[in-house]
Image (cartoon, rainbow, N blue to C red; front, side):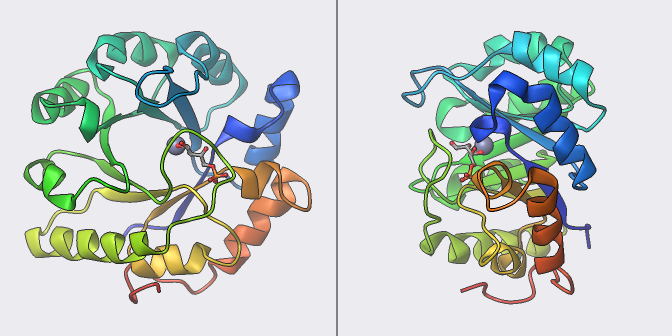
Length: 230
Ligand code: DX5
Ligand code: ZN
């Protein structure tokens, strides 16, 4: 079974001192850095593009996990790959040719992921479970950090974990949105192997590194998929 990974999202970090905020995530034991790219179409806000990813690449050696909340994601694959992305995730709602696009990312020697909004059924990605390296289950409706996790998504994660086990494939299940100290273990018990943590790291009670260490402690003894998580 995969180890549990923590992937801080810099969306709610202080961009005025982003290099420092990234160093704090490293010091706190982050496994990946989650970068939320929004185009103002797929979701209302506009965040950042390859230029910022390039700057983040220079600031850290951590794997960069790019969450593309954009229309026609394939048009930006090369730019994010050149900027230093390690994992490129597209939304299934914006990618009718997901199988082809996931394989294209593999040809570019990138890990390839697919994401589902809360309202999108698991059946939408069933045919690419054996191709994707990562599946992002949105626990909130995308567009903003700091939202409250939708409890109904625990069952969805559990059903996805069962589908993967049934097929004998093991892409990472990344849990994105509303992960906090009091629900992190439940996210893993439901089946999550990677936890995105934005506001719980950068807007929590303590420093980012202390918040990350507290999350890691809250996961002590947690086993992926060991429970319904509700
Ligand atoms: C929202 C993004 C999330 C967000 C997570 O659309 O995809 O990655 O930054 O932030 P929290 O952990 O605060 O919900
Ligand atoms: Zn995200």
